Amino acid sequence: MKKEKRIRKSIGVEENFKSYKFLYFIIICVCFFPFISPAIALIIGLVYSIIGIKYEYIHTYTSRILQASIVLMGFGMSLATVVSSSKNGFIETAISVSIVMILGILLGKLLKVEKNIALLIATGTAICGGSAIAAIAPILNSKSYQNSFALIVVFVLNAIALFLFPFIGHTIGLSQETFGNWAAIAIHDTSSVVGAGAIYGEQALQIATTVKLIRALWIIPLSFVIAFLYKTEDKQSIKFPWFILLFVFAILFANFFPNFQASYTHFSWLGQRGMVVALFLIGSNIGINDIKQSGTKSFALGIILWGIIAVGSLFFLI
Image 1 (cartoon, one colour):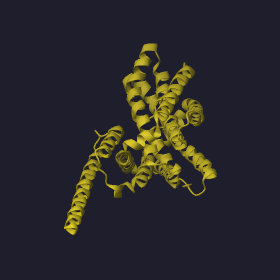
Image 2 (tube, rainbow, N blue to C red):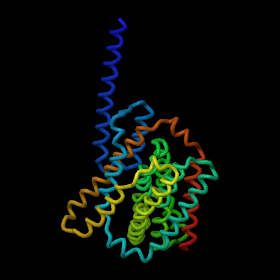
Image 3 (tube, rainbow, N blue to C red):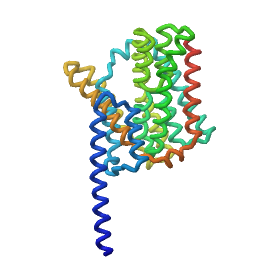
Image 4 (cartoon, rainbow, N blue to C red):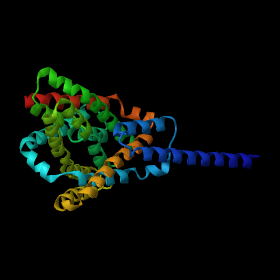
């Protein structure tokens, strides 16, 4: 009788495993459609986790998918655009990235936020939201709940900024140029920067997009700095960011050999969709208890940091 119960239990587990695998397969396929944004993918993953749908095996590939996606997105970046817009946006971007990272670390210590969460939130705020967090996470060897909480903070603030920034800009009468620079500096994610710029005007959209591109490239030197500093604290945990070198190679290759532009467009699209898949996997591997473990202070850090850079950059630009 006991043997029969064990057999039934094992059969039930196997059936759940197959059904969970199928449910994961469906969402991964859906992630390649344009109506699934990174935020939506993360939310779907969180819903899966909350209701108990979990496929452990595939989570072992999350880090690899993140890294491969970052490399593929490099094929869609233009060096010519970066160089042409660097005269106007480089200084502002360099100052903002440095200030946000320093403030993020100091505020993290002041609020007693976990080191990895503070670094991830600061990186996402300083550079390019979820993409920056995804690039830094493997270097820090951060835990799933740390990655997820940083992503949640960034995506929530992005959603708010998409509607709030154009309203503020029109209210105080910002020019197209000023708003474009402000959006690129103070809004985390590229999609929200582009969206806010498009709402405000064509010139604001062009400026916001090019300056944001410069800001995104700071992920390269910052990755090496964090890898170096992290090594001094725990030599066993350091993971040299080889994928960042491949990311740089992808940018250079795409710009030196422009004849394959059609292929580069496909590679970049695949990288963007791969990032969406990775965010779904990250969300599905996090539990409510893990989110609670990060504490309200971590969320306060993200809000304070974002508020400082938004107000500070606007004051600087005006």
